[in-house]
Image (cartoon, rainbow, N blue to C red; front, side):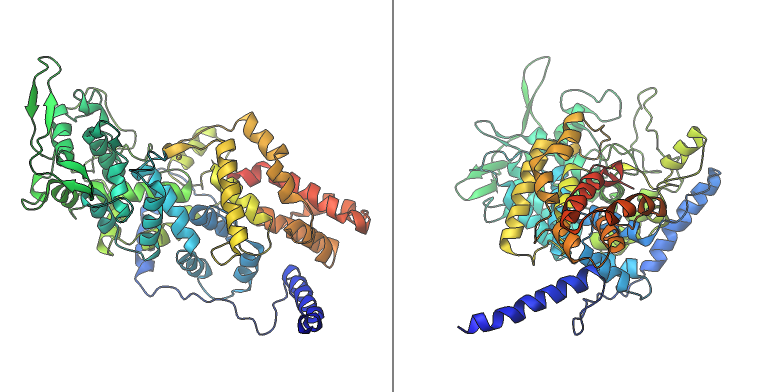
Length: 555
């Protein structure tokens, strides 16, 4: 048969490709994808951010850490945007790219990758709708995720997304954005207007006013009647056979805790009354108020969240409990001693305002916001310092004069493990079976490892069960197994020499080459290993690298 005649040629081509891949020799006639850097005034915005930090560090008498190598930055970028370390395929292409500003161009390239849209959608959705699956019949988180990832992929302006989430109508299957509202639907009770109001303000304005639904906020200026006015915007929501709609005959009532009498509350906002239009439904008016260009809380909230997703630690913590914008504090009595640790003085410049203004002035593009942050000085600094003074080191961390060391989140751990088991990139172009295996394994691992929930940016210590899972879990054994089609198997069999073999293991697992000390330790052992036992050595090395602190931390 003809296919039998072609088989030797196909096998030979596959072998040549594998050898060329692990030895860093590009195949002739194969072009690498080029992504040109956007022709925008990006450099000017980056310089503004850098100037902010240079002035801040000088004012604090801080010398920032040294600039880190570009492979480390590449690892940070892929972990932040796609939840995984870069593949060997991507590392090779990156290193062969000798053009100027390659980090900026590769950031732009990743931001046009489907993996970014899917991964970042999940991260943002946790703040928008939480992590609970809810009632499948009247709530579809998966449909919401798909919709959100599509919006990120097309780079729609952020306010448009928020307005559709707040003011959307229709079925949760046909109009997936209304799942933001359906996440606040309680079976038998209807829409929980208080829950929706609290979620909207936390997610889109970055402030926690939930306490004010029952009483005046004990530590801030929010009043109970202000919260009720916000909740009243959702007071005419109704679930009908055609999905979510507005019932203009419904009245929003609040029960007085003392008299137990109910009173009708009309929609109102606690500040910026002129931003709320007079026309439209209640939710349309609220959506317009939330996203109004003068509502600085809106842009500050998303900037703080994106900063946190990129660095692993938000500029102001918690990510959704921001102080009032400098110079725009809400009038009213403040609680004695209630003071945000990073609150700015009136008139003093603030990073969130700087990046927020740039975000607004450039069409509210999330991609561009990410590009500015990733190219700024703090993102390019080393995570280590020679400073011996703990107090000074703490101040460096506080002011991002050193890249913050943060634990990888569970989905980043499993994403990196799975990618390290393949020399080629696991993405939307991979075989359907590969993508299915990645999805199922990721879900199982995160469930067993422990999902951090919607407050995933909060600092948490690692646990012994998590460490044991990385050391002895079935997935680890399958990942490091040196089979013909796994990365460890290909490295052990196809690498031309032991030095290359060792280098490839480090590149695939840690996105760096071994140090001189590491090479001096491992190479003699590897050279004494019989050829038929090389696979076992690579498996052991993989296991060691996977369980090293360096693998489990962003640095």
